[in-house]
Amino acid sequence: MLEYASKPLLVRYGETDQMGIVHHSNYFRYFEVARLEWLTALGVSYALMEKEGVIMPVIDAKISYKTPALFDDKLIINIFLSETPRVKIKFTYEVKNQKNELICTGETTLAFLNSVSRKPIRCPESFISIFES
Image (cartoon, rainbow, N blue to C red; front, side, top):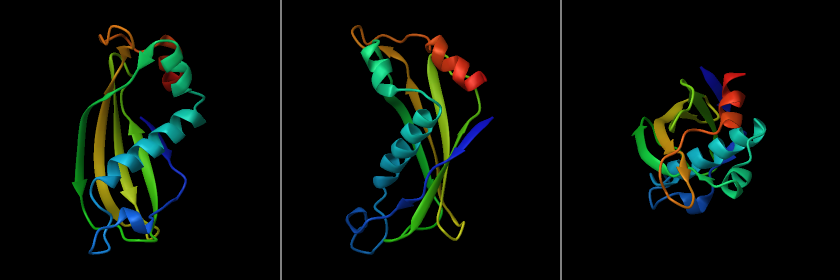
């Protein structure tokens, strides 16, 4: 299993609701920020993949909330990849605050598609080799 811990992500005021709690929709943005950060750290350029005709839409997303995150919390998003990507890639997440309290868990599944035909394709070999090394 591969894993990655993101840089601390500061909860901004505009991400909270009237109760001072992070609005539920923001967690999927946090997942994306951490996922792209990890891919960049691995040397994967999402922009280059798109130029080469590969797009990766999210086709499934799940989240389970445990305790609220609040304005000014510093969140760490731990990402796990338990299987080698093929036509899809599934990321699992744990979000913790600065006190190491579990805020939520989640999953996103992305598909590899040809950018012109929008049909599923196999994961590029260069991408697979990064995750298998």
